[in-house]
Length: 312
Image 1 (cartoon, rainbow, N blue to C red):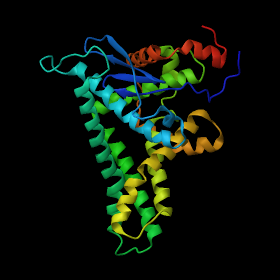
Image 2 (image 1 turned 90 degrees about the vertical axis):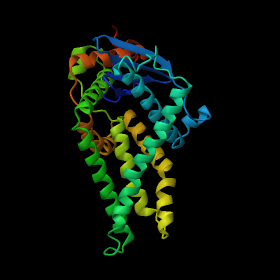
Image 3 (image 1 turned 120 degrees about the horizontal axis):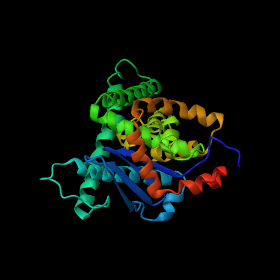
C-alpha cells in the first residue's frame, strides 16, 4: 500500500444547494437533492465553460477569472434547480434534469450580473467611500488604503456572521459541511461511508469561502501599492482590477489544494477559520446526499486505489 499523505488532490469540488449538494468533476456535475418525500433525486449534466476558447482555462491567472464566473453561473443554475423541488405544485413545472432551457439561462445570466453588481458595491466600492469620509482628518494615502482594507475585511466578516444566523442558511451550511467532509474523506484515503465522512473535517483549503477571503486580502494589498490621484479613477481602478484580483486569488487556492507545505498552511489558516462560519456539522441524511452527488460523477474507488493503493 502506498504511503498516505494529506495532500492528495482529487479534482472534485462543489457547493451546497437547497436541501442538497452539487458536485463537479471536470466537465460533469451532479445535483443531489433530498426531496420532501425523503428520497434523493440526482441529476447529472455536462457544463460548458463561459470561456470563449478552452485554452483560456489553462492559462495561469486568466483561468481564474473564467473559473470564478463559471462557479457563479453553475452555482445559481443548480440553486434554482434545487429550489424547484420545494415550489408549490401550482407554480412548478418540474424539470427532469439540472440542465436549463434558453429562458432559464437568460434568467441565470441576469442573476449572475445582479449578484456581481451587489457584491462589487458592497465589498469593493462601499469600503472605499467609507474610508474617504476620513480624508479630512487623514491625508496619507497609504493609511487610508489600509483603513479601506480593514473596513472591507470587517464588512466581509459581518456579512458572513449575519447570514449564518438565518435558519434556512444554517441548513445550507450543514450541507456545505457535508460536501467538504466527503472530499476530505476521499483525499485522506478513506472509503466513502457515512461513518468515515462524519469523522472527516468540514474545512477544506479549496473552499469558496477561502477564495473570497483571498479576494479581499489581495485587494487590500493591491490598493495599497497601486494608487491614482483622481477620485473618479480610484473608483475605476477598483473595478478594472477585479479580474486581476480574482486571477491571483484562484492561483493561490489552486496551489493550496495541491500542497501542504508550511507556507501554504499559514496562507490557508484565515480562510479555514472563516469556514467555521460557513459550514456546520451535517446529519447522516445530509452526508448520504453528498455521497450520492460524489458517486454520480467521480469514480472514487479507482481514485483510492491509484492514490493510496486501497483496493475495494
